[in-house]
Amino acid sequence: MEALPLAFTSGWASGINAYACVLILGLLGRFAGADDVPTALTSNGVLIAAGVLFAFEFVADKIPYIDSAWDAISTVIRPTVGAIIAVLLSGEASTLQQAVIVTTGGLVALLSHAVKSSLRLAINTSPEPVTNIAASSGEDIAVVSVISLAAFHPEVALVIAGILLVLGLIGVYVALKFIKRGYARFKAWREKRSAPAAGSSAV
Image: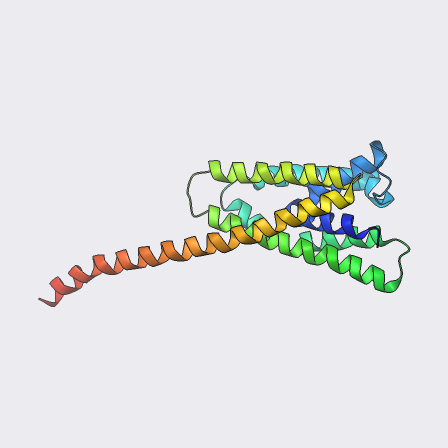
């Protein structure tokens, strides 16, 4: 079960930005001597593909509404990448251990993806693009930092990723309450405006 901390952390990172997770792990495994990184992630093909897709997501993720569309497309991709990395990490583990590791990677990736996409929908209620850019940049920095730490200190990174996941879930809860409250106020304001118009037409 030694691979579990890295599987959890890479799952969290994959749910936020799968291509950045693969790219950073691959680069660290190939050039920085991170022994826990699966060899498959260090190949030229994987690094080039991850780099190109990361560059595309780096731009798309900072444009309002485009980011939410990209999140929708990535709903299957991000958890799948998290699970694949977990499969590679499980290596020669027994069947039960592999199941636990793979389930952890995929499930955590799905949860962090849900957090990211939900928060982005909330952010997109504001028309200005600055918030999107700031949120996306913060996510990129968090993924790169936590994955870089996980490659050499997986247990420490596990704690950080777990805290970030919990904070994200709390953020989604608060954002949903805020959106519901705002919608209720808008609905009440619209009904208040339509009431005089309905009264005057009746006269």
